[in-house]
Image 1: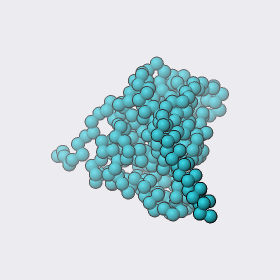
Image 2 (image 1 turned 180 degrees about the horizontal axis):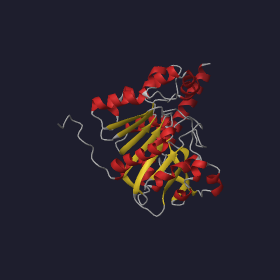
Image 3 (image 1 turned 180 degrees about the vertical axis):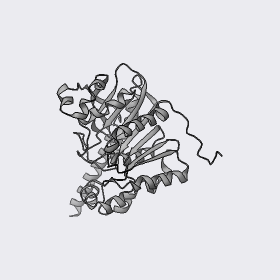
Image 4 (image 1 turned 30 degrees about the vertical axis):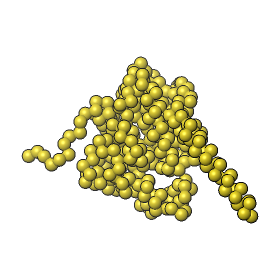
Length: 322
């Protein structure tokens, strides 16, 4: 038994060391595949929303991509305005989990309006989704799949201005955005829509989330539940966020997936820290603020135009005026 246990320990040690060696030699952010993705006319015609974008889509270039992150092959999309160079970049941090709400050939077309406004967009599907290798950890090592986009952006300097990077995150993507802002200061502006900032409360209000998402995806959840949830909840550590990155918080009072109080409580934390932010709450808005779709898109574009494209300074946060 002792010999067998020792053999098992040695085998496990070898596996761990081998994995570490692979990780050390991983070319994080390396663009492994970039394939042009024509948008078929029948796809646009089959969807009333996309049909309205037909003229815009003609001015936007789409690609399917695969890039390296922690020795894993991660799939996603890129799109940008045709004929323009060195434009600002926005990372689109998706919501959902696993393949639920993953970026697809269809829904990525809805990003065309922002690309047509002069932005290069990168939409990653994270590990464990959209054909990407690895396992979804719902805010664990999968955050690296966003962070590892930065070296890829640096390699595309003719197309992207690496000094102007923004993030737009919705729902789970809001959590991923907060976690990213805690680990880099390279983000010039952020928009978080219906973002989850308190996983403990989300699990209490939606037991199915705790059972079917948190418990299934978060490593070590059964034995380390509180720490796992708090480490993913920005309300617990707002002081860690990049202090010079302005954050736009959008929420709807009719949202049943993520309590809009996440955004209100986050705004209170940011206010006390004098962190630049703006909070907008939409009366009766659902999780995707679908009732305010046109207004939401305009607000998001104006925010990125001001603080990402033009890099305007933030107004004084100290009490002032008459």
